[in-house]
Image 1 (cartoon, rainbow, N blue to C red):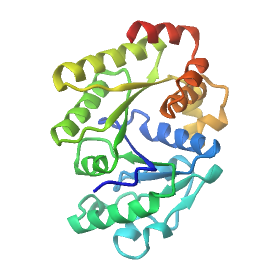
Image 2: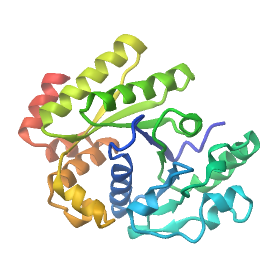
Image 3: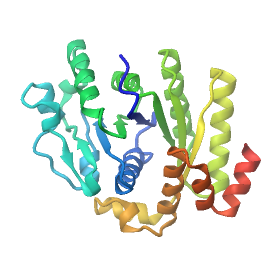
Image 4: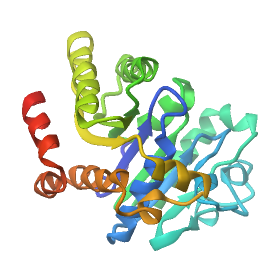
Length: 270
């Protein structure tokens, strides 16, 4: 079933937990909203929701109320800063990880209707390679793959890519390298994954950018605040703007926002 072509449905996955996927999703969505885009973010970890927690929000209704037929989908949407819309998940609900085919089908239809007037619909997927990940990946023609430079995170990112390929799902894949100590390290990670994907899967991925290891991100996370607003001048925030520009197809703005060293590395690795 195809979703509305006017909206961009983008899944955000990692394979491995703890790589900063939710933090990146939330901050990216908030910044897109601040710039005037209509953005809906779905907490796609149906059993261990984190989106609202990361923003310090306590929703009255969640997807659990939707799947138990207590509320319609549009009734559980909450609004955050700059008009960002959030479809909240829930934590500690095992039965949401075992949805029936009928529930999945109805959810697709309702989500299609809900997302038709939005510019972006992001799905912050669960970590791992389970059925939830495959289900949400079927909804989204695009995937942002988040990894860190750790070999286990890179291996799991590649594993997620491979699982989707084997399931005949071939979204456009964007890569974000998180917690890199330098632009060189981030580009090295991108190069290794790009070569592995090309050699073993016959596919490709596109580089969105990297976020550095930054104390500002850790400090804002503890306060349940978005780092892009708590520390707008931090390196992580500046790099997030580069990611945003590139995602929007504005390579000129992305290039202007990058430092000279980043541009040199882009030329070397292109």
